[in-house]
Amino acid sequence: IYDPTSGSGSLLINIGTAVSKYMKSPDKVKYYAQELKENTYNLTRMNLVMRGISPSNLFVRNGDTLEDDWPFFEEGQTDTYQLVKVDAVVSNPPYSQKWDVKDKKFDPRFSNYGVAPKGKADLAFLLHDLYHLEDDGIMTIVLPHGVLFRGNEEETIRMNLIEKNNIETCGDGPFVSVPLFMPVEKQGDRHKRTVPMSPLCSTPGLVFPAIVPFPDSNWKRYCKRAFALLE
Image 1: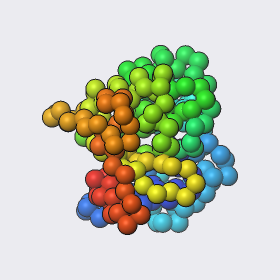
Image 2: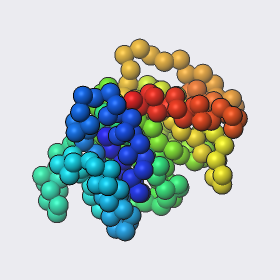
Image 3: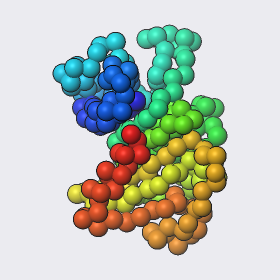
């Protein structure tokens, strides 16, 4: 399991706990995490170790996820890069962050979908997560509402995600300060999904399918369902 913007590591720990219940041994779960801020990266490592996770199953790195695609290469030797794909990705990246788009159209993480605008890296994080997902894997990511409606590059990425059949479902829930939603994604399924028109947008085909607004009373239930899908 992998969190490319791990923060304190809490999301990764929760998913690891859920997954390990269905495995003969919790030692079979490997944890991959990357965090930009050094202090928070140290917090990730500390929290994972304090949960009794074997150090041999921990792969935690201090680095810029969008600039340094990881996992996995030996430190300082990008020519040793080996793509690692995981069964589950979970992330809550910084919202609408600026990033360097130079030459990103040649990056295999983005080349088949499009490059997010330099002032809003939200969908760049999503595509990074998706790139590291096994064919039968599943991911969920928390994003701001803007990725549903903004045009230009983000519209192109949305269309490609739908056409490549990556979206499983999306949930729109009550958060405190920034309106957010949580898509659950997979690599393209064998069977084509129906793409209904979102009740949040008047333009069919330009938004993620199955966007369902939830009242407060149903949000916890949706989160449990999303985590059940990850399990």
